[in-house]
Length: 204
Image (cartoon, rainbow, N blue to C red; front, side, top):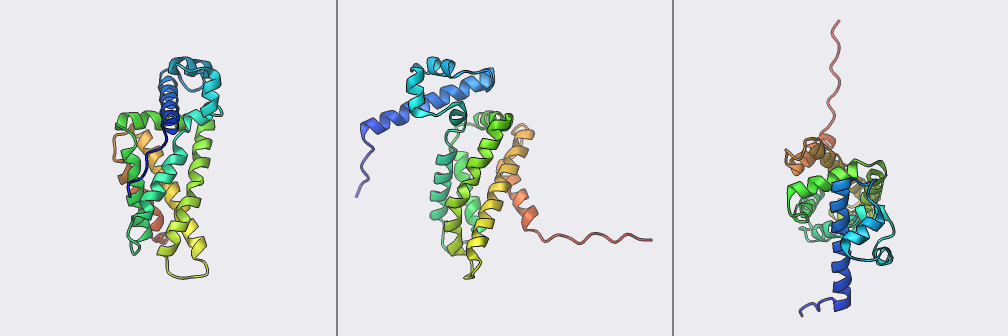
């Protein structure tokens, strides 16, 4: 059975929310996050400040808009992966949905630079990404061997994968987008999954 489209009112709210968020990001990129006011965002988006507050709690909420939705999209993609697939391979495939969300690498770099270039946004970004763990762990757990510590292991894998993604994103930003972000992610994952080599013995 075909899924019913969302009611027109919900569709309209979604369009307005996306318009305000996109306008805010454009102003943040042009003027800087700290120098952009909510009044300026509302005016540029063609809405009242009161209307803006119907969609977003504050300026940080505007800048971090989409992270929760990203987590849900990744989780949905993860749930679609084969049940017998290695959890790390499933996560790698699920994270690829992020490449589909931004129209260009330049726009993604612009957004990442904004988020990581401001301490409060950086902290908010990390906090929201950490919540992805609650979405991913229950989907990872059935893929692991039966054990009384399987829940712990699933949460650890989810947390480690999210940390690798964040580290790769920061490195990608540092390189000015002149690298494949998921090659960097793969390198980060390889670093934590590879057994540590013993330290070389000093010769007398």
